Length: 251
Image (cartoon, rainbow, N blue to C red; front, side):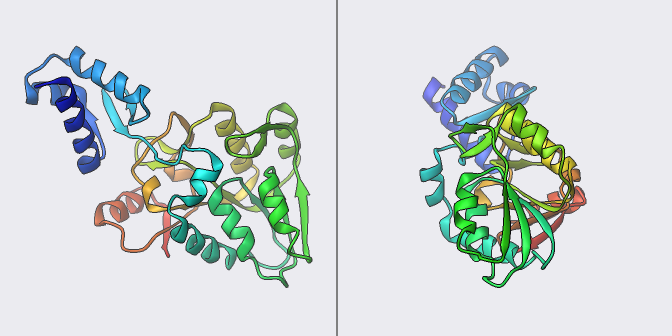
């Protein structure tokens, strides 16, 4: 089997099964495990999968720049944002993470909502200018341009001094083994800190993020309070989240 044929088969199996075990796959096609590991390294280098111990998982497609991500699954993100916006109650203190789905959440907030929203995302803060009764608290720091959020020591220190009712967290992948993941180590650390400061953590995830993985874990699925995702998902996804005791709200 040619290299390109092996790589195409690897990607087909990942789409079908959601994972690939290098040792098992090498025996099935009659090549060495070292050969398969090399294929996996090259595919991972091209951003086509996420390597893990013993094999690979599907790579999250939500790794493009902010402008490109706004177009990815856009109708679903609007629906997810609208649903999540209805969960915010008057008087609550809420943390809105960066990300294109949370931008849709901010846009969908009722104009008469009185609440406090904390964010480290300039994009979210700008959206909230249109909501006259929302008290907006902006956390600063070093701007991580890929996600348009503040990170770094100053950001972490400010977050450590607040407590919020609900954290709406952005992710690039949700997988039963790795949990919620993202593509940057420092951003993952900031997200973990926000979750620790929050009474509950809600993840908004469109379909393409489910079963996918990025390099850095934020939280295991068991530490997510609620997952808001699309309706009509395959049964294995519903089973996966039920097994991990994550409350799922289809949209």
